[in-house]
Image 1 (cartoon, helix red, strand yellow):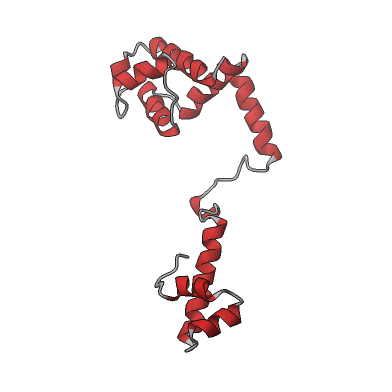
Image 2: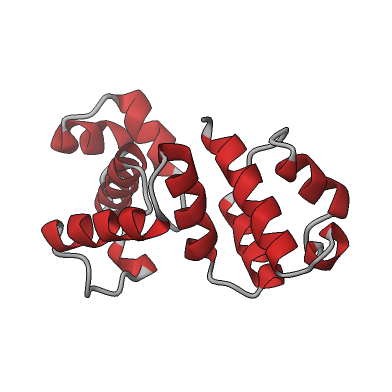
Length: 154
């Protein structure tokens, strides 16, 4: 079974078990979109899953665990136990993740930021572009791209 179809089955089952109409879930989600999700015509985004779970008055993970279980032919308990085992193996089960822990800048962009900082630091000492290029072992055109930038990102 496709995950999209398993999600459709799960959403429809939960909605009907709770006695809700599609319109009851549409706080932040259009009722026609809920209908397309329940027919498996659309795939859900993580934000929409969150909104639907709120409408169903359950945790977003509950909805996903049920859908993944339906897709694999196992119970939500088995899906969640597997997740617990994996998180334990990764030593992340009891670790709260924070945005500042993640590397949000692409490595190439980070390198560019560092190059800009280096170019601007040498520029501030009075060196010209050719001299900066020689010191940093960069082409003059690369130095030129960084020469007029102002505030490099962190």
